[in-house]
Every structure is written in C-alpha cells, then in structure tokens.
Amino acid sequence: MHVLIADDDSVSRRLLQSYLQKWGYEVTAARDGAEAWDLFEKGSFPLIITDWMMPELDGPGLLRRVRSAGRPGYVYAMLVTAKSEKEDLVEGMDAGADDFLTKPFDRDELRVRLRAGERIIRLEQNVREAKVALIETEKLASLGRLAAGVSHEINNPLAFVVNNLSVLRRDVLDTMRVLDKYREGGDHLAKADPGLAAEAARLEEEIDLPYLRENLPRVFDSSAEGLRRVRAIVQNLRDFARLDEAEFKEVDVNAAIQSTLEALRHESYTKAIRVETAFGELPPVTCHAGKINQTFLNILLNAIQASEREGLIEVRTRPDGDAAIMVEVEDHGSGIRPEDLPHIFEPFFTTKPVGAGTGLGLSVGYGIVRDQGGTIEVESVVGRGSLFRIRLPHRPPEAGAGSGSTTGRG
Image 1: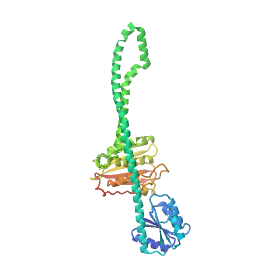
Image 2: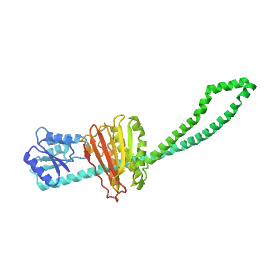
Image 3: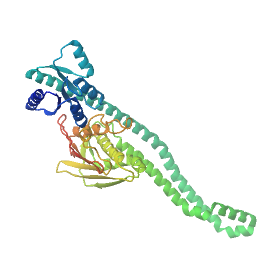
C-alpha cells in the first residue's frame, strides 16, 4: 500500500518513513503540505500521514484539498499532532482526518493505527466493488429483458412482412406473365379497337412498363435483403444480450466479437471509423456469454470514443499457449495519460466530462475477466492510441480461485 507522508520535521519524517518501509509499505515523503498536495495530484495514495503544523499549507488544509479532490476510492488520513484539546480534535476531524497520532508517537501504536486504516480502506473498496456489481447486474438484467422484449416484438411483425413479400413477389411476377400474354395480342387489339389499344400504349409509357419489368425482380431482391438484415440485427441483439444465462457455456469468441461489432455498427459508422479484424482459429471458451460480450462491448466502445473521425480500430484474436486465447483491441486515437493509466480499472474513474460517462465500463469488464480467471493488460501512448490485451483461459477456474491482473505502460 502506498503511503504519503507530509512533515516539515526531517527527523520525524525520516523516522516515519523508516518504520513504514520496514513494515512493507511503499512510502513517498513530502517536506510540507504544499509539496504533499503536488504529489497527491500526480499519484495514488490510499493512506496519508500528515503533520498538523507546517509552513505554506498545514495538515488540515492539506486534508481539505484531498477531500475535495473527488478521487475514486477512499483516502484514509491520519493527523500527527501534539494538540489534544477537544476543539483541536474537532477541527482536525472537520478537515477530514480519520485518526490522530499524538507526538511523540509510539512505534507500536503507529502500527496498530495503520492496520486499522488498512481495514477501513479494504472495507470501502469492497463496498464500492459490491455497489458496482449490483449496478451492473441490474443493468445487464434490464438489458437482457429489453433485448428479449424488443426482439420478440420485432420478430412477429417481421415474419408477417417477410411472408407477405414472398407472396407479393410470386403474385406480381405471375401477373406480369399474364400481362405479357395480353401484350402478344396487341396487334389484334389495335385492329379491333384502335382507341383501347392507344390507351393501353399510353398507360404503358406512363408507367414505363419495360423499366418496371426489368427492375421489379431487383426491387424484390433488395427488399428481401433488407428484411434479412433486419432479422440478422435482431439475432445479433439476441446473441449479444444473452445476459440471463447464469451457467457457463462454450462460446465462439470470434462470433461473440463480431456480434458485438454489429451492435456497435451505428457508433463506428457515425464517426466513419474503419474496423479491421484478424481472427485466428480459436477453440471454444467456457464462460458467461453475456458477460464476456459486455466486456468486449465496453472495450470496443472505449476504442471508438477515443478514436478520431475516420480512424482505425484493429481487433485481433489468436491462441495463447495450450490453455488460453488472446484478444487484442488496438485504437490509434488520443491515448491515455500516464498518470491516469493506473486508475482506468477503478470503479467510477473517468476522464470524460461530467455526465458523459459513469466510469464503470472498464471496471466491470476487468471484474468479469478476473472472475473468468483471465487478465487485461493495457499499453497506451498519448497521441498514438491504446492497446488492450484480454487473455481468457479455455475454462474458468474453480469458484473463488479466479484472479486477474492489469498493467499499464505509458
């Protein structure tokens, strides 16, 4: 766990640092509150130990800034002070302190209080993860119900239209054959009733009968193709939103990615983004189909959003050893800043403007892949784009045995 120390007393600062490093903490030390705030803005510190009295920015002032920063994840703050009056303690807690350590501090007391802080940080993280899981579970369930309802409502009238078009095509073409027979007697009609023949010729010219005869089959073909595409979209929606499947099933990952790309066709079309796929031959992967689709959706949607207009996204799959497969999603967009890279899988972390994102997409995807026993790795360079690597084992681990990891290299 990374701890930020702020103390203008070099002896006290070094003593704290030596204790914490001996106990296995990663420590960053600042000489005053202002330097500590600069370090906090650039890094991730779940635990802060700060002296009260410091030049430029004192301990309570530092904690007020920390609490107003709006960072995802809780920051446990400990004030080190010789103050013991009730008013002082109230002021410190009001500034955002979780605990106090009295000067001169006792080594054993410091360690006990640090352990208490770690427990609170882990508890808060568990609560956040549970909240994310609940939100996403409800979202997935709602999407599953919506997809099932929409596909059912579309399929019924779609079946009517498909059948009626087939009947209409048959009857219209039969009618055209009957009309052809009538036209063969055009000369006899002209002799028998010149006025009627002239009227028939005028109507033929008015509707451009030769053009109609030539293009009717193509009109029916294009209409049938449009209906096939609608049916395929509905099927893709059903395939993508298999969110009520609680059991593990064998999944064709290439087909799942293709289905997800179809679901995102509008987003990529709107920005004129070209998507290139290179699918390797993969064995089936046993997983929760709907959840894995959701992971692919979140990562592909992020790639689309990060890409410039007329950009390129590359999606590749390949076997990874004898027991896993690898999926790579690479965009050539804006990239991720090095200081943001360690946080992209944290719940509610987002670099998008307020209201433009929840900060749950990548966090949920990371959790799904972790539970599957896989990993997500990220490489990103600002201005050049990002590469996500998703490794999935052929079969998930036993319940409770799954673990995942993520790396970020700016």
